[in-house]
Image (cartoon, rainbow, N blue to C red; front, top):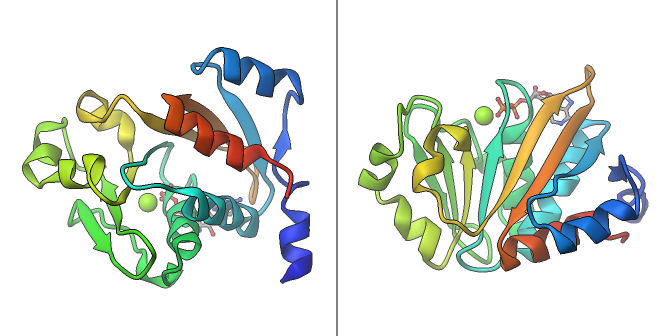
Amino acid sequence: MRRGSRRLARPIRLTRVGRVVYEMVMNPQFPLVVVMRSLAETLALGRRIGRAARPGDVVALIGELGAGKTALTKGVLAGLGGNPDDVTSPTFVLMLRHDGGRLPLFHFDAYRLAGGAELVEIGAEEGFYGKGLSVIEWADRVAGVLPENRLEMRLRVTGRTEREIALTPLGDRARALAEVLIEDS
Ligand SMILES: Nc1ncnc2c1ncn2[C@@H]1O[C@H](COP(=O)(O)OP(=O)(O)O)[C@@H](O)[C@H]1O
Ligand SMILES: [Mg+2]
Protein backbone atom coordinates (compact mmCIF):
# COMPACT_ATOMS: atom_id res chain seq x y z
CA MET A 1 0.00 0.00 0.00
CA ARG A 2 2.78 2.34 0.98
CA ARG A 3 4.60 1.59 -2.19
CA GLY A 4 1.41 2.34 -4.09
CA SER A 5 1.01 5.79 -2.63
CA ARG A 6 4.67 6.65 -3.08
CA ARG A 7 4.40 5.79 -6.75
CA LEU A 8 1.58 8.26 -7.23
CA ALA A 9 3.77 11.32 -7.77
CA ARG A 10 5.46 9.75 -10.77
CA PRO A 11 2.40 8.58 -12.68
CA ILE A 12 0.84 12.01 -12.46
CA ARG A 13 3.32 13.25 -14.97
CA LEU A 14 2.97 16.78 -16.17
CA THR A 15 3.36 17.12 -19.89
CA ARG A 16 4.80 20.56 -19.39
CA VAL A 17 6.29 20.63 -15.94
CA GLY A 18 6.74 23.71 -13.80
CA ARG A 19 5.52 26.43 -16.08
CA VAL A 20 2.11 24.88 -16.24
CA VAL A 21 1.60 25.12 -12.52
CA TYR A 22 2.59 28.75 -12.62
CA GLU A 23 0.32 29.51 -15.53
CA MET A 24 -2.56 27.64 -13.96
CA VAL A 25 -2.39 29.92 -10.96
CA MET A 26 -2.21 32.96 -13.19
CA ASN A 27 -4.82 31.80 -15.65
CA PRO A 28 -7.50 29.42 -14.42
CA GLN A 29 -8.49 28.56 -17.99
CA PHE A 30 -5.10 27.13 -18.79
CA PRO A 31 -5.40 23.38 -19.05
CA LEU A 32 -2.99 21.24 -17.15
CA VAL A 33 -2.45 17.77 -18.56
CA VAL A 34 -1.77 14.69 -16.45
CA VAL A 35 -1.07 11.24 -17.85
CA MET A 36 -2.52 8.09 -16.30
CA ARG A 37 -0.64 5.02 -17.44
CA SER A 38 -2.99 2.44 -15.95
CA LEU A 39 -6.43 2.02 -14.47
CA ALA A 40 -4.79 1.90 -11.03
CA GLU A 41 -3.34 5.37 -11.59
CA THR A 42 -6.70 6.77 -12.63
CA LEU A 43 -8.26 5.28 -9.50
CA ALA A 44 -5.49 6.86 -7.42
CA LEU A 45 -6.17 10.25 -9.00
CA GLY A 46 -9.85 9.83 -8.15
CA ARG A 47 -8.97 8.98 -4.56
CA ARG A 48 -7.04 12.23 -4.28
CA ILE A 49 -10.14 14.12 -5.39
CA GLY A 50 -12.26 12.26 -2.84
CA ARG A 51 -9.82 12.98 -0.03
CA ALA A 52 -9.53 16.69 -0.82
CA ALA A 53 -13.15 17.42 -1.74
CA ARG A 54 -15.21 19.92 0.17
CA PRO A 55 -19.00 20.31 0.28
CA GLY A 56 -20.31 21.86 -2.93
CA ASP A 57 -17.30 20.90 -5.06
CA VAL A 58 -18.18 19.98 -8.63
CA VAL A 59 -16.11 17.84 -10.99
CA ALA A 60 -17.19 17.92 -14.63
CA LEU A 61 -15.96 14.91 -16.61
CA ILE A 62 -15.76 15.09 -20.39
CA GLY A 63 -14.59 12.29 -22.66
CA GLU A 64 -15.70 9.55 -25.00
CA LEU A 65 -17.14 6.19 -23.97
CA GLY A 66 -14.43 4.14 -22.30
CA ALA A 67 -12.27 7.15 -21.48
CA GLY A 68 -12.39 6.33 -17.77
CA LYS A 69 -14.98 8.71 -16.34
CA THR A 70 -16.72 6.02 -14.30
CA ALA A 71 -13.37 4.54 -13.24
CA LEU A 72 -12.27 7.93 -11.95
CA THR A 73 -15.55 8.28 -10.06
CA LYS A 74 -14.94 4.93 -8.36
CA GLY A 75 -11.67 6.34 -7.09
CA VAL A 76 -13.46 9.45 -5.86
CA LEU A 77 -15.89 7.41 -3.76
CA ALA A 78 -13.00 5.39 -2.36
CA GLY A 79 -11.22 8.63 -1.44
CA LEU A 80 -14.32 9.81 0.39
CA GLY A 81 -14.20 6.59 2.40
CA GLY A 82 -16.93 4.73 0.52
CA ASN A 83 -16.90 1.51 -1.45
CA PRO A 84 -15.72 2.05 -5.04
CA ASP A 85 -17.78 -0.95 -6.18
CA ASP A 86 -20.94 0.99 -5.37
CA VAL A 87 -20.22 3.26 -8.34
CA THR A 88 -21.73 1.90 -11.52
CA SER A 89 -22.62 3.56 -14.76
CA PRO A 90 -25.80 5.46 -13.93
CA THR A 91 -26.70 5.98 -17.59
CA PHE A 92 -30.29 4.89 -17.09
CA VAL A 93 -30.94 6.68 -13.83
CA LEU A 94 -29.13 9.98 -14.47
CA MET A 95 -28.04 10.33 -10.88
CA LEU A 96 -26.97 8.06 -8.08
CA ARG A 97 -26.29 9.32 -4.58
CA HIS A 98 -23.72 7.52 -2.45
CA ASP A 99 -23.68 8.08 1.28
CA GLY A 100 -20.91 5.67 2.22
CA GLY A 101 -18.20 8.32 2.57
CA ARG A 102 -17.52 11.43 4.63
CA LEU A 103 -19.55 13.55 2.16
CA PRO A 104 -22.44 12.48 -0.05
CA LEU A 105 -21.34 11.82 -3.63
CA PHE A 106 -23.80 12.81 -6.35
CA HIS A 107 -22.85 10.89 -9.47
CA PHE A 108 -24.54 12.12 -12.64
CA ASP A 109 -24.50 10.72 -16.14
CA ALA A 110 -25.75 13.14 -18.75
CA TYR A 111 -25.17 10.76 -21.69
CA ARG A 112 -28.84 10.53 -22.58
CA LEU A 113 -29.67 14.16 -21.97
CA ALA A 114 -30.20 16.61 -24.77
CA GLY A 115 -29.62 19.55 -22.47
CA GLY A 116 -29.47 20.72 -18.91
CA ALA A 117 -33.19 21.19 -18.14
CA GLU A 118 -33.67 17.55 -17.22
CA LEU A 119 -30.73 17.70 -14.87
CA VAL A 120 -32.31 20.59 -13.04
CA GLU A 121 -35.60 18.66 -12.90
CA ILE A 122 -34.07 15.72 -11.11
CA GLY A 123 -32.77 18.03 -8.40
CA ALA A 124 -29.16 18.35 -9.47
CA GLU A 125 -28.84 21.60 -7.59
CA GLU A 126 -29.00 19.77 -4.30
CA GLY A 127 -25.69 18.28 -5.29
CA PHE A 128 -24.20 21.37 -6.92
CA TYR A 129 -24.87 23.81 -4.14
CA GLY A 130 -25.34 21.53 -1.15
CA LYS A 131 -23.32 19.45 1.23
CA GLY A 132 -22.00 16.94 -1.22
CA LEU A 133 -19.48 16.45 -3.98
CA SER A 134 -20.89 16.25 -7.51
CA VAL A 135 -19.27 14.31 -10.32
CA ILE A 136 -20.89 14.66 -13.74
CA GLU A 137 -20.11 12.33 -16.64
CA TRP A 138 -20.69 13.81 -20.12
CA ALA A 139 -20.66 17.26 -18.53
CA ASP A 140 -20.28 18.92 -21.93
CA ARG A 141 -23.90 17.97 -22.68
CA VAL A 142 -25.22 19.98 -19.75
CA ALA A 143 -22.61 22.72 -19.50
CA GLY A 144 -25.28 25.42 -19.42
CA VAL A 145 -26.63 24.39 -16.02
CA LEU A 146 -23.36 23.59 -14.29
CA PRO A 147 -22.08 25.86 -11.55
CA GLU A 148 -19.42 28.34 -12.63
CA ASN A 149 -17.12 26.95 -9.99
CA ARG A 150 -16.08 23.55 -11.20
CA LEU A 151 -13.09 21.44 -12.04
CA GLU A 152 -13.31 20.35 -15.64
CA MET A 153 -11.47 17.17 -16.53
CA ARG A 154 -11.20 16.17 -20.19
CA LEU A 155 -10.19 12.55 -20.58
CA ARG A 156 -8.57 11.23 -23.73
CA VAL A 157 -7.68 7.67 -24.66
CA THR A 158 -4.01 7.76 -25.67
CA GLY A 159 -3.20 4.05 -25.41
CA ARG A 160 -4.64 0.71 -24.37
CA THR A 161 -4.18 1.57 -20.71
CA GLU A 162 -3.11 5.19 -21.03
CA ARG A 163 -5.36 8.20 -20.55
CA GLU A 164 -4.52 11.87 -20.77
CA ILE A 165 -6.55 14.15 -18.55
CA ALA A 166 -6.63 17.90 -19.09
CA LEU A 167 -7.63 19.81 -15.96
CA THR A 168 -9.33 23.16 -16.27
CA PRO A 169 -10.05 24.63 -12.85
CA LEU A 170 -12.81 27.22 -12.95
CA GLY A 171 -12.91 29.20 -9.73
CA ASP A 172 -10.89 29.19 -6.52
CA ARG A 173 -12.14 25.91 -5.09
CA ALA A 174 -11.50 24.08 -8.33
CA ARG A 175 -8.02 25.52 -8.45
CA ALA A 176 -7.34 24.28 -4.93
CA LEU A 177 -8.56 20.84 -5.94
CA ALA A 178 -6.44 20.82 -9.10
CA GLU A 179 -3.38 21.76 -7.06
CA VAL A 180 -3.94 18.78 -4.79
CA LEU A 181 -4.05 16.56 -7.85
CA ILE A 182 -0.67 17.60 -9.17
CA GLU A 183 1.14 17.82 -5.83
CA ASP A 184 3.89 15.31 -5.13
CA SER A 185 2.94 13.00 -2.32
N1 LIG B 1 -5.63 4.42 -17.37
C1 LIG B 1 -6.92 4.05 -17.36
N2 LIG B 1 -7.84 4.81 -16.74
C2 LIG B 1 -9.15 4.49 -16.75
N3 LIG B 1 -9.65 3.40 -17.35
C3 LIG B 1 -8.79 2.59 -17.98
C4 LIG B 1 -7.40 2.87 -18.01
N4 LIG B 1 -6.79 1.90 -18.72
C5 LIG B 1 -7.74 1.05 -19.10
N5 LIG B 1 -8.95 1.45 -18.66
C6 LIG B 1 -10.22 0.75 -18.95
O1 LIG B 1 -11.02 1.62 -19.72
C7 LIG B 1 -12.39 1.45 -19.36
C8 LIG B 1 -12.96 2.78 -18.85
O2 LIG B 1 -14.33 2.59 -18.67
P1 LIG B 1 -15.25 3.64 -17.93
O3 LIG B 1 -14.58 4.13 -16.71
O4 LIG B 1 -16.57 2.98 -17.78
O5 LIG B 1 -15.30 4.80 -19.03
P2 LIG B 1 -16.40 5.93 -19.22
O6 LIG B 1 -17.18 6.08 -17.95
O7 LIG B 1 -15.59 7.15 -19.57
O8 LIG B 1 -17.24 5.48 -20.38
C9 LIG B 1 -12.44 0.38 -18.29
O9 LIG B 1 -12.70 -0.86 -18.90
C10 LIG B 1 -11.03 0.42 -17.72
O10 LIG B 1 -10.62 -0.81 -17.19
MG1 LIG C 1 -19.27 6.05 -17.58
